Image 1 (cartoon, rainbow, N blue to C red):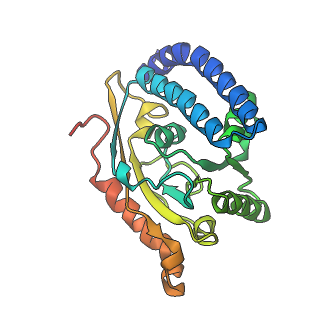
Image 2: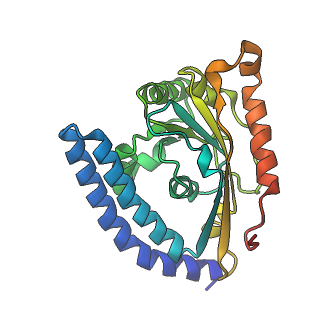
Length: 251
């Protein structure tokens, strides 16, 4: 049996029951508190329970999370859009584990998994059909509505996970979710997340690095600046990504 299979199987044995219990409790309590019009209380409880779950996942997957720039996370209730690179299915837990709670634009296939569907809904995530331009635009507009309502959103503008470690071109259309409501863009670089699950190759601890960069106020940008915004953010994320250490380095 390969190291990857042993490590992942062992981790899932301990993660799965905790995932089911905490997810169900978070979904039930979240909906109950929302029904009682206690929206902020619902968000705090859900984030706390899922934070415990994420810590448990990191422990059994052998992850050590290192986050720079937490001071750049805006206050809750501001118009915010997190823009991050995408390498692994662990990117979402890493975003949340770093303190960036938000609704995410996620592929519609994830919403077909029963328990995960409930979690994504309580976190106000939006399903996107990447095969349809019209459906994709509809999803972006849904994200715009949520940002306008003071709920932060996040998106991976590459459109799919990178399997090579290289950051692909970021789609300009994805940035509309931030520019239409005049939101703050928070560029985020994440490195080594793929080595915690998809590309596991040893039993060693994997160090995952996250750099949260300074907000970009899209409402203050000129038309010319908005035209090249996706390129500028892509460049900033790529530079930060290149400066972060490898999977088994600790600094």
